[in-house]
Length: 379
Image 1 (tube, helix red, strand yellow):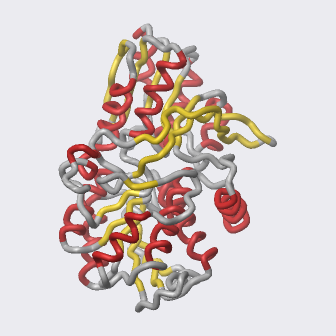
Image 2 (cartoon, one colour):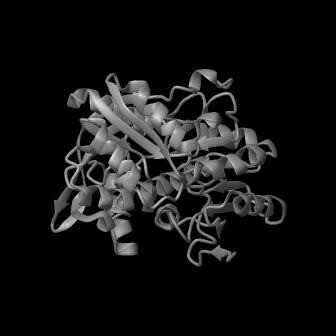
Image 3 (tube, one colour):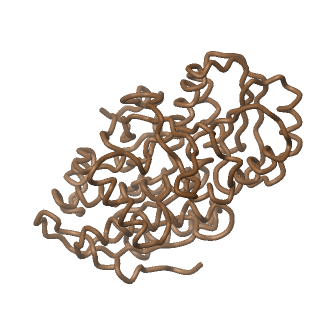
């Protein structure tokens, strides 16, 4: 496992509003190799961009590759906590890895700021004062698509997702809002790349629409095979399956697809414009949803460091809870379970200046809080 200490970031963060404190260590565990690596790379790059733009000092950012393996993620977390003595952990993409790391880390007193994975267990009874999610609870974008399906007039939707925590949350979320009939429901293998059997079932089901959650390379494979199959049934999904990092690989097969997201590059705000412009200049590509979440995670931490010393856990937690930062998505606040309350948009995949990208076309749900908050003991 190769440890990465970002050269321009190792001493960049602190004291943005004059709160003097010792060096802060942040341990980032994310996926940088193999399937799904584009997700982790974008989270890392968005996080680092926020730190660089802040021009602060005194943070040591340690980055490790979990290779999308729970046992590797757990070992890295133990190393960060026991050997490196990090103050904050972040970076995990996949919910099964989050479940292997977060409960143990937070019980040990380490703060965890999630830029992505938001499994239902951590939003409900297993919520913890040391755990903050800056992205969403797993169900949220799927709930938004269930709401969109109703508005679009779909009556018989076929749904599928990988068989892991985020996949089960995805289909629960869609069904929570969707009022029509299910033409079929399937759980696929995590990392699967051949969907011929599933597409055959869709063809035979009589579905008038398809909802799928297949992040990273899984979504690329499904959409390409679906387009080649000739099945003429509209598809929809969350932003994870139509994020900027994978749209070029899907190509024209994605055009016209509706997808849900709490962020879009066309949200009109000063902070979002700064993020999009800065990301393109720094990395030579358009930012994805994952990059926006990494960016917001870093800016949340910056906002807390401006108000409290990380060594004072109670004060620092309170500063994180305030979420006193300008999010690229617009309005943002934490609910009682330290998960976002936020608007979720409907986007459409378009071709703009010769490049395949997303455009916001409406709001699916406003000021949305997850369904598990009522089970969380925190206030």
